Every structure is written in structure tokens, then in C-alpha cells.
Length: 140
Length: 131
Image (cartoon, rainbow over all chains, first blue to last red; front, side):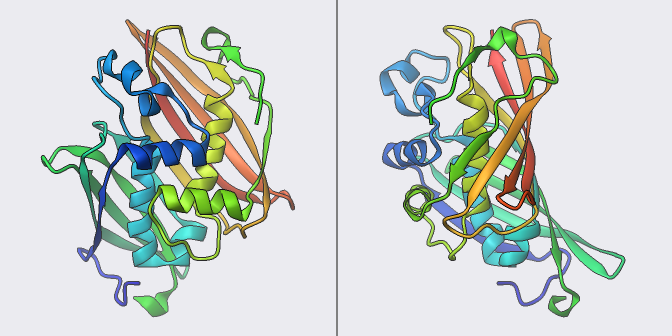
């Protein structure tokens, strides 16, 4: 976890390699068997040209980065807004980076507002967005 | 979970999907953690709960034939941790439906409660459906 919560501080990045096996596992765990994720012959005939990872799988990696930085504060009181820009595909390596944009104080409670980006190995943005986490002042 | 599906055309703003109940068993959480390549920390990952809520919505309607459904954006707010083994209830519905040219956008919203009726999380998912 972060020992200091300061504006501009970068969060530890998370790097993940996407495979069709991981996508299939996520489909089983989530119950989302949309063929665009799991049916390679169906997906090949769509404008996407092949299977893509579930957007929520990519967001799980963002959540991993946030949990690593803020622990239970994130898990129990986090807030997230994400925009899916491009699909992640099997064979992609995703790197999730984030940083603390600003720290606000409201009624004795502090909030860290962060931004994040998830990019593939070509540098394309897959997901981007903002998060907000409440934290106690003794961590500041 | 087997649910009755309705057609995409029948989805209108204000429509509520039937509530969906999930028991977050250790086996389900373990499967989720394996899928997202994470170690976990003794609680149900909030995004595993989100996955249940989204499945409750997207599994309840059938998209127009020959189309694909694209997840365009997601908003989430977490309110409390949920222990493994807990039961949750997902309340989901249609907030907005916008059609522009050959693209239809559906904004779905959800709230998840625990057995004590305390809110666990809420969110909104924007789904794009090229028609």
C-alpha cells in the first residue's frame, strides 16, 4: 500500500498478458458468454475481426492496481468511472498506469482523486478513467 | 442461473429486470480470482459482484439478431466489503435508451444489496448496439 498519499504520485503499474484461456475463464466466472468473447469463428466474421476480452476483465486489472495502492479503502469505498476505447485481444500485453491527481478534504475526510490508463503493447489506450478513494488522514 | 429473456426492442427507460440473487460461494470467488489472475484478500472482489450484476442484466435480454453488444463505459461505487459465502441481490434496470442513426445506446443501472438489505455497490453501464 502507499505510505504517502500525495498529489502527482504515481501508482504501481500492473502488467497483464491477455490469452483466450483467460477470457474463457472470465466468461465462466462471470456468466458472460457473449460470442464476441468466446467464439473465435463467430468473432472473426464481425467488424472486430476476432475475439476480445471482456471490458470488466480489463477493469479488474485497474481494480488490482487500486487495491495495491489503497487496500480496503478502495474495496469498501471506492468510486470509478471508465471509458472503453479499444478492445483488448488475445496476445495483448496490457499495462495499467495511474496517478493521484488531487487530494481533497471534506468534513474531516480526505479523498484521493486518481486517473488511470490501460494501454496495449502498441501504446493504444484500451480503457481510461478516474477513480476516487476515501482515506484516513493518518496516511497522508 | 436461468432467466426469461426479453427482446431488445422491449427495453424502455424505467424497465426493471427481475431481481437476481447470487450466493458468492468460495468456488465462485476462486474461479473469478483465477480468471483475473489475482490472489484475493479474503473478501469477494467488488468487481466480481459487478460481474454478477452485469450478467443479471445482459443475460436478461437478447440483442437484435446479427448484432454485437459493446461495453462502452462503466461507473461504479462501492459501499461495503462482502465476505465470501454471502448472498447478494442485484436490482437492475434501464436508465436510458438512445438511438442515433444505426447506433443504439442503452444505459443500464444497478444496485446490489446484501442479505441485511444494506447497499453493497451501485453502478451504470453504457452498452452500444450497432443496429
